[in-house]
Image (tube, rainbow, N blue to C red; front, side, top):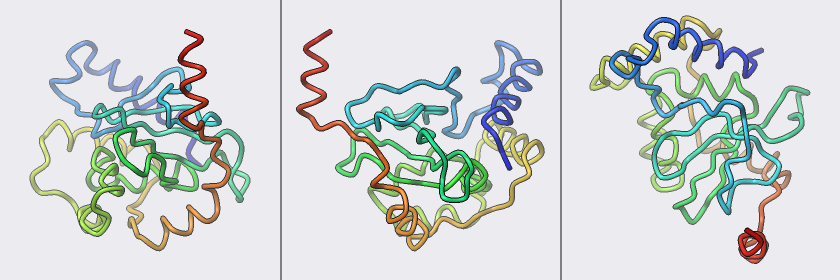
Length: 184
């Protein structure tokens, strides 16, 4: 079982190894740590999730839904895409599945699930031969430090996760968001 602390340990290892120059050697592949975990605060971020990583693009972030999945592990994992019509996607049942999805190409492009599902399933099925050395360094580090193997992204699995967990998300309506924004 993989814990969020395993992810933090990789981040700590990167900091110890490269310090302030880390971006010369590492690209987090869309998995920039949010430490400590927090509610990301977008109108569409589920109220009952804590963000542990962001892609670094368009506000896309990954959160642990408070509680446990049906196996008794922490999870599921929700991806929030603020700019899309479909803002939240249950992307994995637990951290192990989540980290395994990015085995070949990282996590940055996962947001494309809401725009081009077939294309992104194909992209996530094999290594990207045009990856930057900094991206490859990060993925090699993750594969070395975490007990993961590639788990294929599939439409069937995403539908299964949606049926199983989507109703557990507590999502504000726009009216709720507007009323809390007026209190600031």
